[in-house]
Image (cartoon, rainbow, N blue to C red; front, side, top):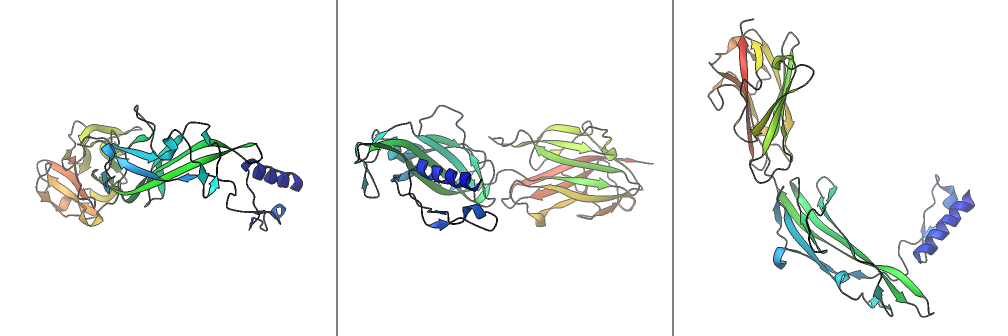
Amino acid sequence: MRKKLLCALVASVCICGASYAQEDYSSPKTPWLKDVKISPYLTEPSPTLPMQIFAENGKTVPATLTEDIPFLVMAETAIFEPNPPENSKGVLLPNARWEEKPVINWYFVDWETNKNTPAILDSQLAVNQMIIRPKNPTGKGAITCYSSRKMRYDKNDGTTKSTYANSSRAADVRVLDITPPLCGFEITTKDGKKGTCWPVENPPDKYPLPKMADVHFSGSLFGAGSTDIVASGLELGDNMAVIKEQAVLSVTRRDVLTIKVIGGDNYKLNTEKIRFGICDGPNGSVVGPINEEKIMLSKIRIPEKPYLFIEAYDLAGNKQAMFIPMEIRRR
């Protein structure tokens, strides 16, 4: 078994056409790699070509983009030129010629979450162009491009050798947040009844504005059975008023509501600016306590059109205000 692994390692080195002899990869868990040393550096020439990334019409990529707004970028590198480089780090590459077409990949990198999103071509563009559409805001990100192209050149011994020319570049950007928070409620009563409501952006990543959302309701307090009640087509923003025909929070005057805020934001929620309670109609005056975990309905003046509301902001200043109609039963 050990001989087979060593043969495989030697074969892979030969295929790459490189000489290795420096870094020891053995460990207590891999004793078969004892005395096998592999250099991290290729000894065969592999040209690295400079690249520049531009915006449309050759302009500099701006330092700030906006989420969900498509942005055209283009790369300039010698990999797209008719002839390949004739040397690599001082090593001559006689009779150099391209063997294949260039391969190019674009990504948007979110350094804050350590994630990258491949950019997929959805329209007919030149080979060196791409439309980047950042789907999430970030304070630190980058548009990155990687390109390679297979080439061949003649060696002094009369043989030919294939290698790859490579090119890459990154342009640092930040992405602005234009999506309001998505906050809802988890509600329980003393007798064990529960109700939950939360908004979901639909369609996701919508542009142009306004953003839209569906509000999902579950639990006996909303009269929901095995499936959620969904109030569709609300504008995600500062006036998300659900109407009684869509869903209603049904409670009694004697109920004590325990309320927990759920949800968040697609970037960073401003937790210090969350407000919730009961108000008189959508955007009406507040009645009763603000931000109290327990609301004793018998202790407050119930308005003619009571609504449970939440008001939330993210750090970019986007506002969500959602209003849920209430039905106060005698029993």
